[in-house]
Length: 195
Image 1: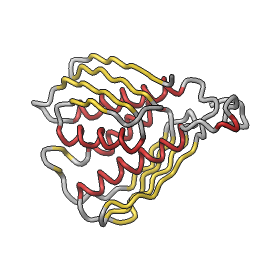
Image 2: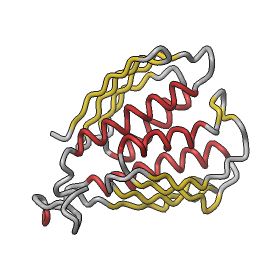
Image 3: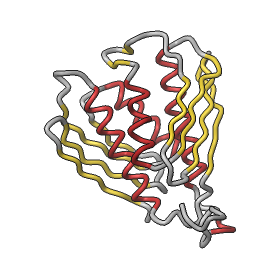
Image 4: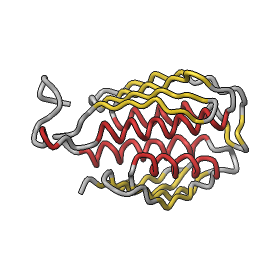
């Protein structure tokens, strides 16, 4: 079972998170931020990951700490669940349309953290969610998951569609990358012999 459970307690957030990479997209998510709940739900659904998240955060301030700390926990869960990474495809990519938005995502679970983020989100908020937190989410995620992640907006004018398209595109790219390739199930996908 490629699963992980993460617990993180700080003065800003208290989080419990569980992840099953080989699930069916089942979720139970409560972060205190409706928009973030929506994004994590569709992320798990499109990735085929079972995901449970409970976060009690300082949302009376804003959603910054909640968003960043949930991403930290999610990235760590991916890193833990992948273990030695033997047999994974390692790379994944997706070009995903979301109405007028078109988002390209590519990921490499290389053991090196890098975020290439090229989203141009026209509004500062979607509901009560600050759209600048989208980049904060992915930056925290890539650091902890130890992956290269590129997210490029090829088209789009609606802020909700752009962000939702990104979460769906990233999820499907990650699903490809973490999938076990049965031909190489005992092999590390690296000519260096380490990831």
